[in-house]
Image (tube, rainbow, N blue to C red; front, side, top):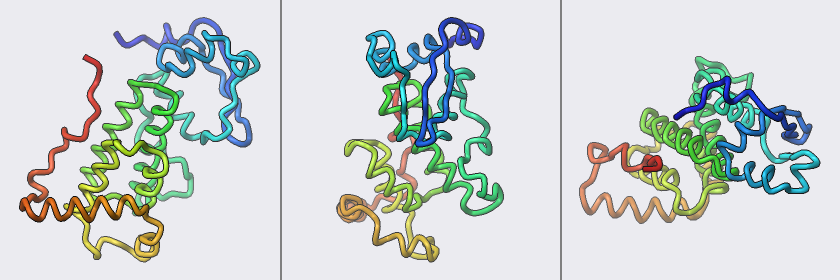
Length: 218
């Protein structure tokens, strides 16, 4: 059963410092420990860091804000409220790119701090996002390969999308310049997968969304 907001807002409150500027978030410990194995071990295991106050200086404030919203509301903020760069035009071409980056960063955060339900939700939202866009931006690919495990379904989807949908006409000047920054592993996987798809005559019609979803616990 999903806990209500009243249940999530009782009990002890803990302070967590986030980002280089150490922005302080005050969060109900029980709600945090209920969702995260990492924080449950930190607070219930009496880690010295937890007793002195946890500091997550390498986590972006926007990423943590999105998690806190989900923690209390059990849903992500509205699409437009989760874009971290205030200068991004909601009607401009960069909007969807930044939304995808937000989902990727949220997924990396959830994976790192062992927040299983949140991890599955943001993972599957990113899968939906890629299927809707039918492309992956290179900054997303670079970030994903730097931060995700090699067996990630997201990496697999990025390779699949590049093979099935990409053409040179899709890359603007920025994307064209970014090709040189793409990971070697990505190029190799695309090369191998493209040959497999070509030999089997597989196209976008056989590209199934559900193959890339994370499944919930039985």
